Length: 202
Image (tube, rainbow, N blue to C red):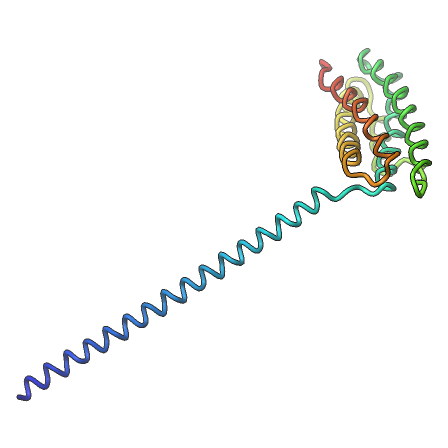
């Protein structure tokens, strides 16, 4: 009789232990699932926030004053650099390209001033070259011979690409109709300059 009671007690202990083990495993599984769901929700939320921020950055239009300052500075630099190329470049194509820069960007400046004056309210066109572009021009003045040619082309490609990006962006999302028209008309001119640079054999 004692042996039967002992065996029964042992079986009951094993059963209780098994139930507790199952309960613990279930609790652990539920906790793991909760963590995975929370992590997933957090990840989705972060991704959503990132996408929202990215979209805001992509569609944020450039303000009229910033656009005018950007293009005016670019024109001033291009005219000055073009004049340098006409006298300092060793490559005949670059000398010719420099003359084209002076002509086209002088016209661009006049067109920009007219468009800025038609804006409501009118936008002031700055008359001083930005410090960053002045530094590039100073470096160009200090270069000689083939070094000038190389640096000139490098700066021109970078400068025209930045100007092109600004023109395209404002033509689509700008807030002033007269300046949007200017940007639309100036885009193919700047693109043409960039195409000539990329086609040059240096």
